[in-house]
Length: 167
Image (cartoon, rainbow, N blue to C red; front, side, top):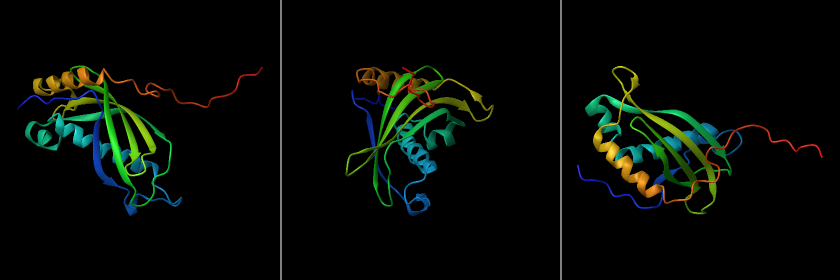
């Protein structure tokens, strides 16, 4: 398979929109479906790396998300178009750390972000295993391109209630 060339810009994934079943009783997209939309976008990135659904069927290996930190910034509503960007932050032979932004595709506002770590897994043993050499070459190429990008401001953010200190 030919080497994929990655530019020094996040990978853009379009083509999703907010479905009726994603709307909750507050009249906006439910939090669970933000995660689903990020996951569907991630499938496109996995396809670029040749570790997507066809790879799983062919090899019996896959990738599992180990950690997920989502921030919800603005509401998405019924039929809103979605654009997701993917930026790789780090990787090793078994794991990838990345950051995704979700935008309203036509109005341009940032709706949510997610920072995730995923791991390559043998479905037979259900244990971690190294990415195949072809995927490692693509991850290295993506890392070389994406390391030129500014790190997302909220990458590595902790979660908690911020309190004003007493003066």
